[in-house]
Length: 230
Image (cartoon, rainbow, N blue to C red; front, top):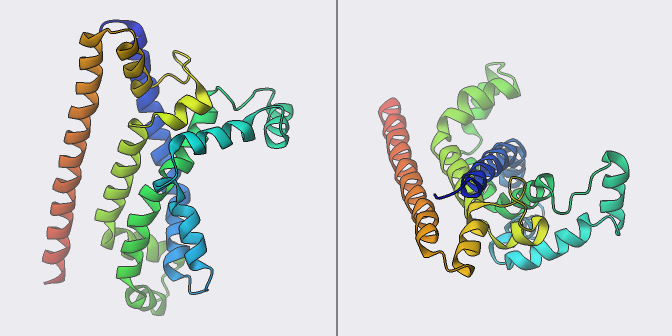
């Protein structure tokens, strides 16, 4: 990378991806558990809403969030009156957009793992007087560790590659909302192809390394579970 703006874009991207992943694990875990145990007819509708970012064009989601965050509209005006700052064109705004946009990439692997785990082990733990937290940290979490690794990795990688949502909500403010994908777009528009190559290669190599680590950790985790179950 040739100048400080690209390093700032890298720092903003990593900060955005790390915070998005952390928050998604905190709110996505109980949501995935709730969906895995839900039996109502409305389950399909709730699952469709959670999965909507998978098919919705990012610019559409970003456009409606921008309207929602605008001080000219109710929710945005309420936040600005409460905090004194606008969510539009701010890091907090793109963080909220990233959480919504990457939600299915974290919730779906966890929901599938919780459904496959079933209730037998947790019911056995409850019969031994283990509380909900004990059952989660000593039964559920170890048995679904591979899915948590996959969910966190997918959430992080998907956020790193965001473009449309971030551009619509945050614009292109260096050190605040300018991420690597937007920096790459800027360099291509300016025909600075050497820098564009560096940025694109960084995203490409980073994605390959992350996927390789996910497969390696999943393989080791599944192998460990098989050994313990023998």
